[in-house]
Length: 176
Image (tube, rainbow, N blue to C red; front, side, top):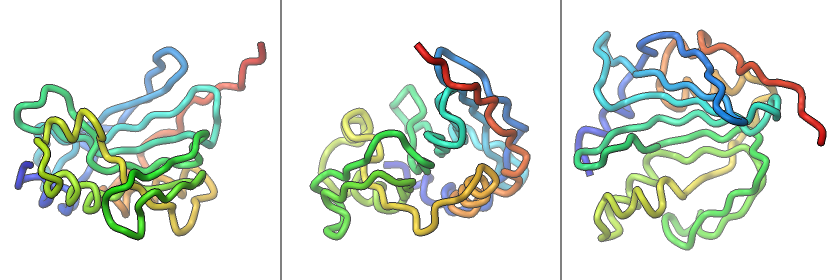
């Protein structure tokens, strides 16, 4: 795995521009490159995504990275706020997190997933395609609103200026 990635994740980052939510099917999402020291980092970006019809829930923010030899950017750390489906950790990774199942806001921490990807003996590309970032922990404190989620994400991902991210343009649920 790239030795370049841990320092990028640890570094203080800013948004390269103000993101704009775009609608595709039943989702809203955005991607924005990340800057370190005023320099936009190639292959490093923040993604936000949510379901159009679920206001104030099922919101995800993740840092994505493009590994050498892999064509698409892949998540390397993520926060899922008020998900509509439960999460279950696999039977690997830190012992205290194995098979942990919960239905709460959670964080796919960079270090736990990185350690697993570099230490499990499988090729990196296979890990990313098959498992992505499978290990998560429930949030200690579940933010009450979007501003709280943005603040938590900014601290967790070490990104300044996330308050500039606009609220998703959620729509009222459709009834069939």
